Amino acid sequence: MPDEQAVLNPTTGWILLAIFSVLWIGLGVYWGRKNKSFEDHALAGRNVGLALASATAAATWITSNTTMLAPQFALQLGIWGMLAYSTASFGLFLFAPIAKRIRKLMPNGYTSGDFMRLRYGRVAWGIFLVFTLFYSLTWLVSMAMAGGIVLNALAGIPYVYGMSVILAVCVLYTMRGGLYAVIGTDFIQSVIIIVGIVIAGFAVLSKVSMAEIHTNLTANSPALLDVLFPAALIAIFNNLLFGLGEVFHNNVWWSRAFAFREGVGQRAFIIAGLVWFPIPIAAGFVALASGALGVAVPSADMVGPLVIANVLGSVGAIAIFIVVFCSLASSIDSLLAATSDLITEDIYRRIARPTAKPAELKNAAQMITLALGIGAWAVCLPRIGTLASVLFFAGPLVASMIWPIVTGLYWKRASRLGAISAMVLGSGIGLWSYFSIGWYVASLIAAMVSMVCVLLFAAFKPEEFQWQELQEGDQ
Image 1: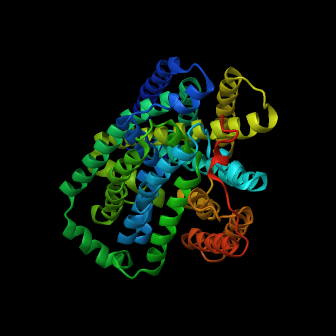
Image 2 (image 1 turned 60 degrees about the vertical axis):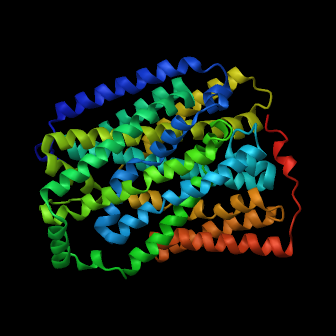
Image 3 (image 1 turned 180 degrees about the vertical axis):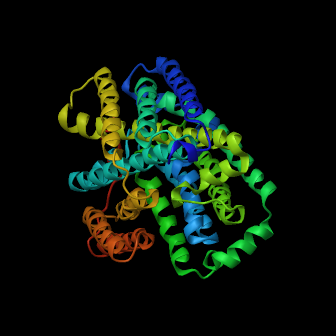
């Protein structure tokens, strides 16, 4: 977007970016003083209390995709689009009892990879690592893209520069502070995000009434009000399963299950889900008001920032700038920390350096964090598609892992062959449907195929797993 079309002066944008960059890096250095070992760096001493636990879970799930992709959903799929994105909160709700189960079965575990290796063996573990690392990079890319997009839309900062700075800041303070820094900054960021979203919603309502929005949609985009809009209805179930898959498999959430103080995890995830649920609805409502407000939307994934900037002017542009920066940081840092820990524990420690000492593991995790940031930056240089197309390409992979994880945690009969076939066939057929039908059915189909595979093998070739095996080798 040319500078003259941006709401903020580029100089103002750079100043805001500098202020928050220095703030987060400073906090990372401050909290990093607590890191004495790899366990401190990766799991914050396994002693995170309820307030910080709830805040970090909510802030991590309030990604840039929540504040930008939810409005895109509403603009393209209407009222059901808003609700479709909100169904991702069920990932947090349903992970709550799973977090309690994880802590009980693996009190000294580190990663979701530990579970897959011990529960299903090395073949399933290898497939899982490929899938989860691919998804993690995709998520990281989608958020970095969002940062470049919003800085360009609001302040005319070139996409590549904005994306690069945001990634660099998150890499620096995550490397230094580990999970201590991630959780501490998440608490601050969650407060800023929630306050900003509430203010933006009321600001839109002060400019245009619900009746005006309805009238405009009825005249110009009646499909967005159609309660039987087929693509939107399918998207609800697709996004629900995608959200479940995202949370259930990813080490971002498993690391928190291991890091939260005993007895805290279940309550923290329920509170986080309650906090997160209304946010996509509020963000989506902003997008539906764009027509009534006469806001030109050059790209669907920029509708949220542009509407708020139109309503509040420079103040609104500054507010959305801060909110999106915080939502970016709260998720990028969590993903960098959890993914680097996964690579450190499951690849570096388990395969490359089995005798590595805690100090060496901590240093390895920091270097891997740096490498992840550089890799994501390289992929983001050419802007590829919209946020939805980038993120949902990984949908079939994550959805195919739902059933192996859930049944593996609760059902002794769940087998290795069932898990392997579920992941391979579920993701394969899901990706075929992604290209042949559309992104809005890919996760749904992958989850269905995965479920059939797990149940068939459990019925005809069951195993009798012993739960104590999950505690072997997790020290």
